[in-house]
Image 1: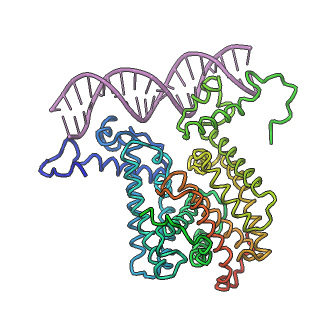
Image 2: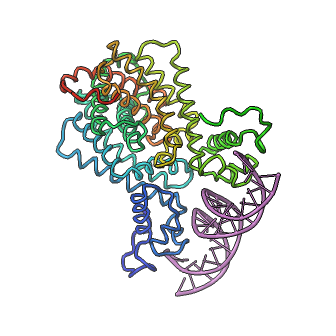
Image 3: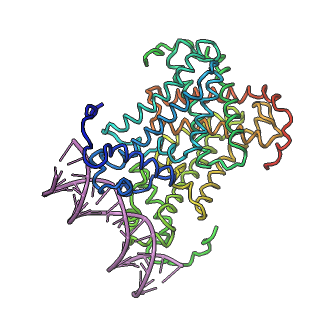
Amino acid sequence: MPKKNRRADPRPYHHGDLRRVLIDTALELVTDEQDWTFSLREVARRAGVSPHAPYNHFTDKQDLLGAVAVVGFERLRVGMLRAMAGIDAPEALLAVIGRTYVRLGLENPALYRLMFSSALADVGPGDRPTLVRSTGAQARAVLEEVIRRGARSGAFAVSPDSEQDQILAALSFWSAVHGLTMLVIDNIWGTDLPVDDRTERLLRTVLEGLRQARAQQSRQPSQATARDHV
Amino acid sequence: MPKKNRRADPRPYHHGDLRRVLIDTALELVTDEQDWTFSLREVARRAGVSPHAPYNHFTDKQDLLGAVAVVGFERLRVGMLRAMAGIDAPEALLAVIGRTYVRLGLENPALYRLMFSSALADVGPGDRPTLVRSTGAQARAVLEEVIRRGARSGAFAVSPDSEQDQILAALSFWSAVHGLTMLVIDNIWGTDLPVDDRTERLLRTVLEGLRQARAQQSRQPSQATARDHV
DNA sequence: ACCTGAACACCGTTCAAGT
DNA sequence: ACCTGAACACCGTTCAAGT
C-alpha cells in the first residue's frame, strides 16, 4: 500500500483525492447508464479535470474500470457478511448467501457484469487484475468457510479432510448462483416466473445435491493428491 | 426468412453476399483476438469494402455483433444435439449437455462471452436481440425437452404436470452449467484443479439435487397457477 | 507530484453521390 | 439496391510544458 503517509498537505493540486473522485464518478456512470461505454474523457469532464489527468492515477481506462469492479466485490463481500449475521446452520447460510448474490446483481446489473467482465480478465502484466482477483477471492473465502463448516458438521456430503473437495463443492454452489444471476440480469432465459421462485428452486436443488452427493464419494476412494492445494 | 429467392443474379455488386462475409470476418476477429473491441472499420477493411458499406446490411456495430452471437448459439445447439445422439437416459443426457456446454465455452471463450454479453441484451426496439433471444431459446428448448422426459419417467423430482416446475428445473440446471462455464473461461475462481474435475463435481451435485428435490415438493402442494405459462 | 493543453491517429456514423 | 468517399464530432493516449 503505497502513497499513504501524507496528511499535512493542504491539497495536492486541485481536489485532495482525484483518484477517489474518478472511481466514484465512474461508478456513478456505470450505475446511471448501466453500461461502461462512456469515455474516459467524460469521466474526466465530470470530475472537472483535463482529459489527461486520469493518467496520473490509472494506467488506462481499463485500469479505472478495474477499480470500480473492486468496489463491487467489496459490496458483495459486505452484503454477504451482513446477511449471514446471526445465522448458524450451514445450509441456511448458503441460502442467504445465494439470495444476497442474486439480489445485489439485480440492484446494479451493470456493476455485476463489469465485475465479471472479460474486459478485466484478460489483462496480463498489470497488477490491477490481480487486485480484482484477490478482492473476489475474499468474497469466495466466505463461501468456502461455510462449506468447510458444513463438511465438518456432516450437513454436507463434502469430505472434511479434502481441501480439494471443499473447493469443488464451493465452486459448484457459486457457479449455480452466479449463473442464475447472470441469466436473470441479462434476461436471457425469457420467462415471467418471479425471480424469487427461480432463486428458491435453484437453491433447493443445489442444497439437496450438496446434502446427498456424499453417497457417491466411495467411487473415488484414494485421491492421494487431495492435499496438494492448501 | 427474407431475401432468399434470388439466384439468377451474377453478383449484386462486389461479392455475392457481403452480409455473410462481414459476419464471417467479425467471427474470425472475435476468435483470433478473443475480443470484440475491433473497429467496424477494421471489419470493412478486411472485407475489402469502404467504411460505410456495412451499414447497408447492419444498422450498427452492435447489430453485426448480434449476428455473430447468433452463429454461436447455432453452434451450441448443434453441438448439444450431436453430443446427445444415441443417448436415452435423461440423466446421461444432462451430463453430456453440461460437458458440451463447458467444452464449447473453453473452445472459444470470447464468442461465449459475446453471446451472453450485455452489449446485445440491452437494446430495445431493434429486431436483432429478438433474433439472438429466439436462437438462444432453441438451445434452451432442447434442454427443457430432456427435463420433461425425465419428469415423466420419474428420473427427476420434477412434476410431470407442471410446465412451470419443468421450466424452473431446467433453468436451475442451465444456471449451474452456465455459471461454471463463465467462471472457468474468465478464470475468476482461481484454482489449478482440472476443468473436468470441476465439471464433474458440479454435474454430480446438480443431478443428485434434481433426483432428490421431489421429496420436498409436498411443501407446496397446491400451486393453482402452475399451468398459466404454456 | 500532479495537472494542463495541444496534438496524433484513430473511431462510429452520416450525408451526398455514384453505378 | 448496394457501394464509395468525404466529412463530423468524437475517442484513447502521448508529449511537452507548466506549478
